[in-house]
Length: 295
Figure 1 (cartoon, rainbow, N blue to C red):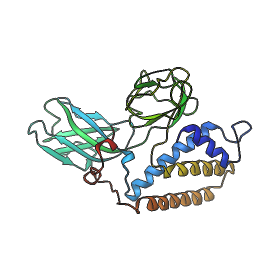
Figure 2 (cartoon, one colour; figure 1 turned 30 degrees about the vertical axis):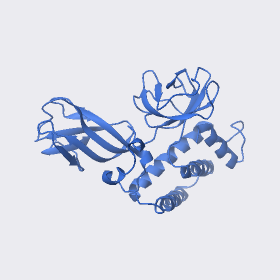
Figure 3 (cartoon, rainbow, N blue to C red; figure 1 turned 90 degrees about the horizontal axis):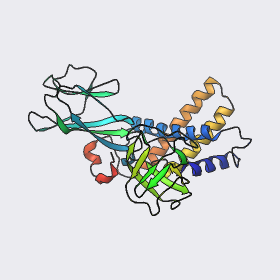
Figure 4 (cartoon, rainbow, N blue to C red; figure 1 turned 90 degrees about the vertical axis):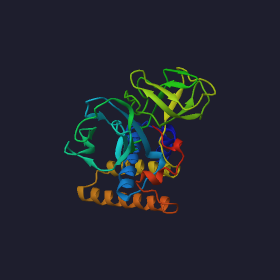
């Protein structure tokens, strides 16, 4: 679902046709849509559900003598960490994080970084792709704008989004979906983003455009997830808009949040309990094709 489609559906349910004379700005409604994704992730995590859409991997290379390494910017929770010990070239799996260095062999988490100890010391030698982190990732926040440029397998995202925000963080949009909406290019053509360079805002797609985007191409970085979630994103934004317009009391807000949580959990059970339950277990999730777990 593109951001433009999302806004159209939300305003239709708010009995509005456009932002003109509206109580709610498009920016606010898009923000509610982004909030809805985090609500789903939080409650999926609480309920023990997982979905290949939100499963990612990241490789970390060891540097001799270095304890700590940066984690992916969109990491929500770690599912499992696998590493090859340089000294033994033997696989080991650690599934418990530590908050300090008092661990003989394993990893610890601190201040947005992951650290490794091998026999109580940092890695003794450098090694490429020594560690694979399997994690649940936050999808990239949605936005739409006009491209700065395009080529056969790339699109340069807007310098400033029409709605939402364009992030200048390397790999931030990896795994996201970019869709062409209007202008040069084939409308409604979409691809997964396989690489993103924050400094240039160039996104590389997992494929080739039928017609290359250009400086008049309007695109959308879409909501990720199952088609069933699209209705939820719209519903969430509508309810949030109406609730904030009424300025509810603190008590009413608590009641509303409890009802919202109950509604999402009910939706999760209906969605996932009708098929094999996907728990936060890497061994189980590997039954999915490798392509479903993008870096």
